[in-house]
Length: 108
Length: 114
Image (cartoon, rainbow over all chains, first blue to last red; front, top):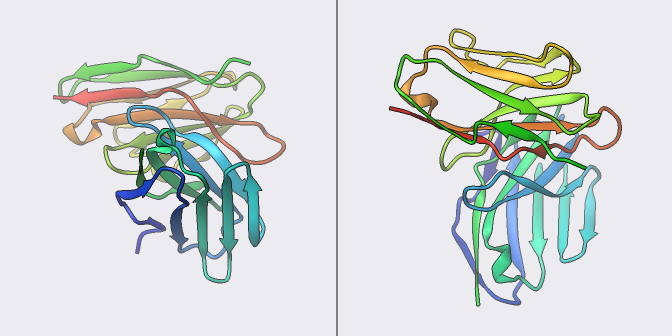
């Protein structure tokens, strides 16, 4: 079983729609959870982090965490073509473990 | 504030050769990480330093990979000898000691082993 699992996609949504990205993790002791965006040929850049159960909003992005279900998600509202990238979920319990990423395409 | 610096950006070598990568973290960041990202996969942590001490190197193939951070600032990752399967992007990241454990990535070094 992979430690951090993501649907590889590609996930395609029309411009202006909500994109929903999901991630599950196996280590129940994980303390912090991150979403990174990675454009093709570039390095990952942090979108947001979440530590507590519930929702955390930052602009068009909302992270949701459910530790009981070992599930974390990222919602992107009003998706733009510039949001087209691979989204990496990362989980930290003393060391950071990344998922393989979900490729998102936002079509104009 | 300057970001994480890495060099070289690209490197092509033949198998069994050696190669070294350099990283300079964000000023004041105590923790430095080296990751390997193979095409189509997420980054895999190779080694984590806090200041000049190793925190975690459990996934570092120590028979061929080595890393050092002598003065607690910049770091070097070496591969000797390289294998075909080492072809990947090597990412360096840093994070501050205090506050959220968010990591900031450098541009990476793309290694091709022929």
